[in-house]
Structure formats: C-alpha cells, structure tokens
Image 1: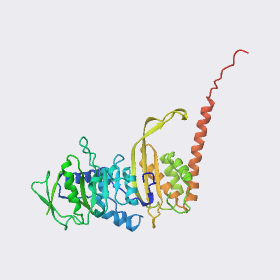
Image 2: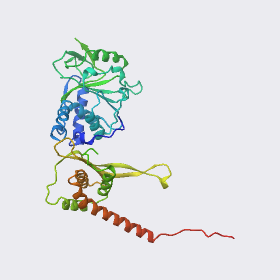
Image 3: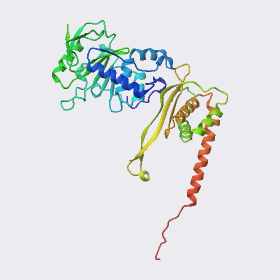
Image 4: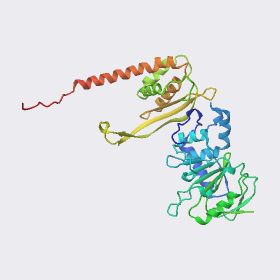
Length: 213
Length: 160
C-alpha cells in the first residue's frame, strides 16, 4: 500500500491557501472537541473537485466527505499513519500527496482513521487506545454518518457540556455507544471520535458520557 | 506517467525535467514564449501551488562512505494538471533550488505540455533542446577551465 505510486491524474486539489485554511479548520475541530455535541461546519476553501478534469464520480464523493477530507488535510503529516476503512485510490492518493501521511493496512497502527460507512466500523478496541504514560498515542476516528440529525437521540454529559446536550446522528450502529462505554473506565486512554457528514461534524472526546435513551 | 499510451518514457521525462530544473527564470520565460508563439497559454488547475521549503541535501564521500547530512537547501516545487476533457489530463511537476515561484510554475507547465503527444515535438525542439545545449556548453567550459589547472601528482620510484 505504501510503496504504490501516487496516482497523480486522480488527485483532488488541496486547500487554496494552506496556512490559513488549515488554521480555520483546526479551530473548528478544536471547538467541536471542546464543546461535545455542537455541530461544527468546515468552511474550507477546497476547490470543488467536480470542476476539474477528474470524473464526476470523484467530484460528488469529495463533497460528501468534505469535512473528513479537510480534517485529514489539516491534521495529518508524515508522522501520523492513516487507516481508511475502504481502500479509496482518490482519497488515499490525495492524502499522501498533500500531507505525506503514510497509509497503513492495520487499523491498530493508525493515528487517524476514516470510516466511510458507519456500519463497517470495526470494534473500537481494534484501534490504538494509547498507554497510561502516553494517552495521546491513541487513534482519532472520523466516522461518516448519513446525517447529524434525525436519528435516535442520545444525551451527552461531561467536560465542555454544562448539563446535558442531545445529539441524534443518523446511521450510527447502536453497538458504537456500547463499545464506547466499555472504553470509558480505561481513561486517560481512549478514543476520540468525530461524526462527519457533508461539511459538518460533531466531536465526541473520550471524556464524554453518553446515555442512550 | 499516466497519460496516453504514447506517453514518454520515464527516462525522457527525467531528462527534460533536469533541463527545466537547471534553467534560470528569464531564459525559461523567453524560451516558453517563443515556443508558445501565438498560442494562448493552456488552462490548468493547481494540485499544489508553488511553495518554498527546505530539503535536506545528503552527501557521500567518494561514493563509498556512509551518507551524511550536508545541509539544507531552499527548494520550490509545484504541481499542476492541465484542464482537459477526459480523465487523463497530464500532470506537470517541477522542483528546483531557490525561491522563484514563477519559475516553478513555468517549469511545471512545460513538463505537463511535453507529455501531450501533439505538443511534444515542437516544444521539445524549441524549448528543451536549446536549453540543454546551453547547459552542456556551460558544463564543457567549466570542465575545460578546471582541466587547465590540473596538477598531476606522481612519485618517482627510487632505488634500482
């Protein structure tokens, strides 16, 4: 996977202004994680892939995971291995080209993981949880859901939330909440998640307690 | 790399990219304008706009020792894709020493156009060949200058 040549003709362009766009996206990601449950919108100036010579399919795909692509462009570099749940030549090549991040075949080695379809999410324990001495060596998941509203409501409590807040992501399997609750006693180890859909995302840090109604 | 079946071999592409990387901006611009005489500059999209950064230059003494870090060099690189219908638009890549963004843009554009089969012969004859000849002449002149100062060291064999 690592040694394969980057498919230059399939690349999607990155940020038009890398310095300021990554700063803006990073602020969105930080705010989303420090206020769990609030919806952050990535207002990144990513050139529309549909307008270029790439096929129409690549263009539509790029709009569907705009927030995920912008987040990965912002967060990844050569030292953060990325795991993609489904091999995606366009996304994988673009990430390697723009960020230099290596793609790994083993979910456990990844610092960032992108799951195209929440139904195919592997058990959360397969990802790196960090260690007691180095809890920052854990994975951050970007999970694409059908929509951030309209699903089964769940109540969130914890740091960054004054009392409780309710989110209702659509298309997230129920086992996700159970698996997440099982990891809670391991704190400070754990996994931080972003639920992404289109250009919007919700942060779910490891400190947030979730009550499924 | 990913163009049509008639795409040039990697060795050819390497050769013209090496020429482009060694040509100063003024010469590149002049030669490019001459080569594109009358034709509008083609439209393209940036995959990576020209950016300046540092690259570590590594050396090896005598070709046998271990590689060591010699120092950092300022490089500018750019990648663009010609705007063409169909999924196989040529991608031009440029990387050279220094911080001249316009030069990277010209070199990347020339690299992309050289991969287009219809444009290749004319562009190669008007752009690459004169520049390659000039680089070769400069190199020969430097070699001759250096050869004139060459000192042969030898030891007389003593005794019988």
